[in-house]
Length: 545
Image (tube, rainbow, N blue to C red):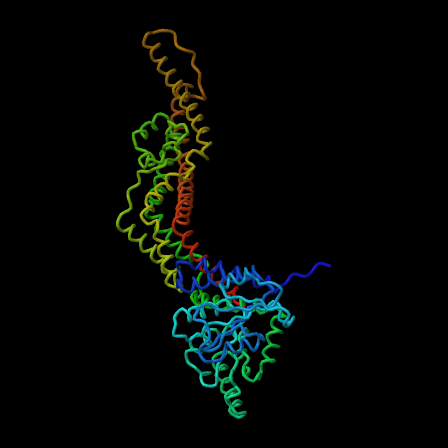
């Protein structure tokens, strides 16, 4: 039967990963010490889970004169630790391991050069690494540093105090209070209890219990013991044996480490409500300012006028429309009628397409000021509630492409397809019709002119053809002229409707191009920072048990 996965281990691994990812997202934006601590805890947890998972590291820590080494010998049943003045001056810790062979990889990670193998003592202690640390209040700085280092690595901490210094401020302020999140993986031993009367012992234990409870260490047990008389030693051994058998203390310590680091990181993120993206109102305001600066209104009006001109050229009476050829095309003046690179340039002035650059006038001071105001307003609204580091990143992201915006907007306008070469198929039909009418009028006029010449030369006249009472040539000439003008007038209505539709479409197309440019250069970079912040805060919360 397949074993069920260890859900607790999976949960811890997921929390470690979440803490590491949160630290990466916070890097460079939140307090460097807090971020570095989160990364240190992540590395430590990953490494500890990877090596000697069945071993339990318990460290005895205490002040000078607390009897820590004597207690180590009493618990282990050995005389490995040298108490008092006999203790070596080395600044390194000592470790004893219960088992068949030393776990060198684990001891190397702990950086313990003095290591001893204990065999055949108590099978319930197999897998135990018991460490004797230098005094945490030693006058030698290297001794204190060693004690501090191992305190960060041990799975369980047994703090040894004596009746005279159990309330020592240095111990409580520098170690116990900061380790309140680790209360469940600590034990406090009042050593040298044999020096107290029963009443004094009860009073001291009560006082010690109250002190720990006030410091958030209500889950930390207190035990009275005496390495000299053996008082409480068996209780300590049983507690240690039970801890070793359960093989959960390492995960508990790592879980506490991760929770503590995650809480500190979460505190740096803060609790303010931060938008997931740039507020829509600010984005619209920016787009409006950019559209004005990019000259979208000028292009819209140029499209409108150009369509009117080109429609008149296409559908007008051939006799009069040539006059419009002397009026400039607004789109050509803006260089919005050049062919795209790699595309054959169209010489027909009725078919402009798009270009890479325009001749739009440069945005004036008013437009530039409005863009700057919109950019700064967007930065302020998007960074509201963010910690200083993230707020700075949002502001920098907002203004990162400030100098590039004019050129990028011009390119966006130039690359926008204004669809000027589509949707005017009826122009061609009207153009054919106008030319047919024009040809009829020319034929009629020529006929009349020929009759006049023949009559002048007194030559035989052409056969007379009438439409009703009017001669056919006259009908063709006058009717063609009137009909051509009428078709032009009717077509002008259609041209005007087309022009307005094209102007509106051009404005929408330009707005899309400008919005895409704003999204790429401003909105997207800001949204990346906002997403980074929100994701980092979520991951930090997830890492807390």
